[in-house]
Amino acid sequence: MEKGTNFEAKDLSLAEQGNNNIELAESNMPALLKIKDRFTKEKPLQGIRVGMALHVTKETAVLVKTLIAGGADVAITGCNPLSTQDDVTAALAKQGVKVWAYKGESKEDYYRYITNVINFKPHITIDDGCDLVSEVHQKHPTLLKELIGGCEETTTGIIRLKAMEKDNALKYPIVAVNDNKTKHLLDNFYGTGQSTIDGILRSTNTLFAGKNVVVAGYGSCGKGVSLRSKALGANVIVTEVDNFRALQAKLDGFRVMPMSEAVKEGDIFVTVTGNKQVITVDLIKNMKNGAILANSGHFNVEIEVDELKKVAKVRQVRPSLEEFTLSNGKKIYICGEGRLVNLAAAEGHPSEVMATSFCGQALAVEYLVKNKGKLPPKVIVLPEEIDDLIASLQLEALGVKIDVLTAAQKKYLSSWQEGT
Ligand code: ADE
Image (cartoon, rainbow, N blue to C red; front, side, top):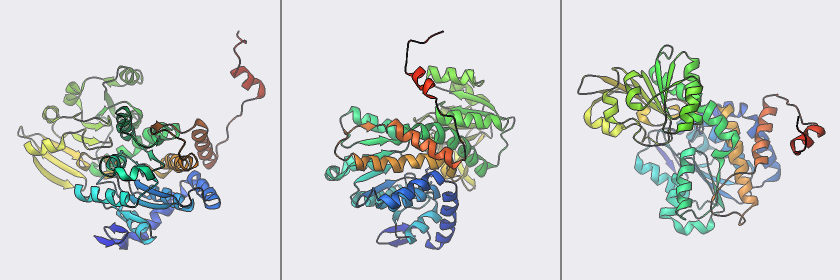
């Protein structure tokens, strides 16, 4: 571990590799670079301290540089003990960014680093999973008066924030960046869809074709994982607790059944529900010998890994893959310790996907600064025009042109008199 006043990183000699990766990410995120160019000229974040708890990846580094270009001072830590890319931490630390993160963080370091970000006294928080906001509210209430607002990246974080709002516990406005169409309909679907399978492949190199892949949860993430698994030749089984989503899965052509039945058929299991105890030890005991389990939900609560450790013999068979031998002799494999497999065992979503998510973050920070003091301490949604602007920037980056409504069409859409 290497430490300085404003950083902790595993190995600063990885900085050159980190810079190469950040450059590569940048080349695939032109929409975000457009915002960065505007920020460089207009400096909308001058004097603003932004505290971040986000996966420290090459794509996040591009967001950090965008905020700095806008005039912000930034401090960052990770939001998951296994998702940090150590070369990126090294590159950011060498560029003078306040950064504390390494892959394989202990729980103690994880929370110590969040405290470092809080001690930086941010005006704006950017969170992925709500741990930063939760820590501020529970342990550092004196900071609340300094806070202009926050941004939340993921579904799990929004669920926690809405629970805070319901309890009247939320004390400053948080933009639900996750709820942008250009976030959850792209990042959760295409990003999680591809990167989850990437993580399972990197940790196991298993063949998907002909396998039964059980996907727990049919939200945007589950839909993406199901479709990509099918494209690789797998037979997909979906488990759900929501009637409508179960119906969607059925009509999308997938088998739908309770997990208690799916465990007997599955070869590969992916949890993406955002809830806990989705795959319990009792369920695991009924799985086939050799079953592979992975979680792509934000927290490591979906598969009962800790409970399983108490009743099984554990062996690390290769990076990001543990083998559990049960008392009935069956061997079960778990990828990335049951933490989000796309970041624990691979590199997270591709840059092209993170481009629109992080345009959302950058523009949400600007929106909060522009509307300082005017927004209620609630979970708020960005105005639709901003979401639409992000989609147009990304289309432009992809070289895609679309039609525009004629005056007659616009009139038709806003009138009720015309029928057959
Ligand atoms: N979440 C999922 N993939 C990510 C990535 N590449 N960077 C930051 N956050 C992510």
